[in-house]
Length: 477
Image 1 (cartoon, rainbow, N blue to C red):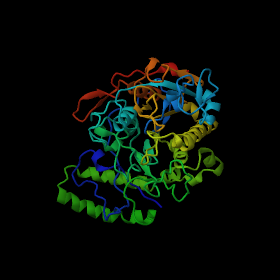
Image 2: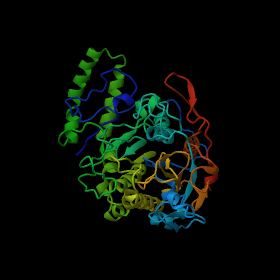
Image 3: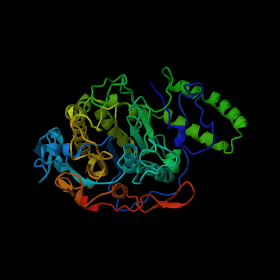
Image 4: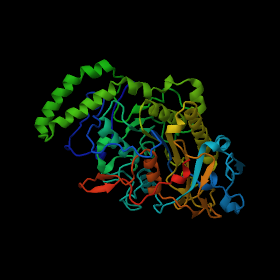
């Protein structure tokens, strides 16, 4: 099956209110027309060690006390039910349910002291993926808006379009779903991964993988190849669409466009042509089709990542960077209460979340290393917040954004190290507090993008891509 679509309209630059109609319900091409606007800056080439970034986003907030900042001497109400195990990093005790990562901790750095005050899932997700506080106050909304700050991946896309022009495969991708798609029956489109005021031309190519029912969580259960289609997000046609049928529909689409322009009084008639050309290049690209066909991977590799959705999505990220994508975000999102947002109990964390994360990240680092890609690929794994030091009577923990860890590897990161320390309860940093602005500056710096580089916002004002952040260069060798 081949389906090609793009982002939702509210993320997009305005052309007209009826722009990019999806013809015939399934779309005249089986697609909505994707991005192809020009950018203004060349990609800087200073200090960068990373050719690409794989950003594993554990949405919901993994507990620091159940992962990389365990406090075995704290009272039981704080330390929790899990035991620490030794790692290959001096002084680093890791949760017993992360054994693969403990055995290879010499490959990564644990940054223990991420901290911010936006104690909210949507706002925290925006903050972590953009390096900018969300303009919506806590409790004021849950969905992305066109006024959001552009994600790091969108800035990478923007700069690469200017340097290389639009290609058949974008430089920024999100797998396996947009954040919120499987959450509460698709109720949310969480902010943070989009281009916001930078314009929809820089939104990610996003795949979709469905779940079986409202209670299903494919992120950790075994998934069949029939489920792992990694279709590009949008309104899929009801049946298979061949490439010949796509090409044969071009003339019909051209007629539709011509009539629609007359009706709409379109002020920029060439723009729709560019969108359609970009869409057709994407849908007919053999490079895209090969990259998204995970069945091409040997069973041995696929099994090492885990046949669950998070593992296969992480493997897909590796395939995409090999194909030329520069920034891939892998979401491990919330599924109707079964998530890293573990308020009630630790059973899912113990039995599902930690084991699948452990397996997939360990396999990714091993795979990248064996392929000679780890030296040029920055891997970042984290949530948008941590959990309260004090557990609750139900065995869970609440939201806690003032301290949480991140794992960073590759692209010159000094493995076998820990950066920053927390207090005795894993509540606050005691040294090297690191903000989302600092994290964004670090990622941009690793990519060779000056964090102080300025872009024009929606009002034409020059603004830095990161405001107030400083790259944490001490974690690099």
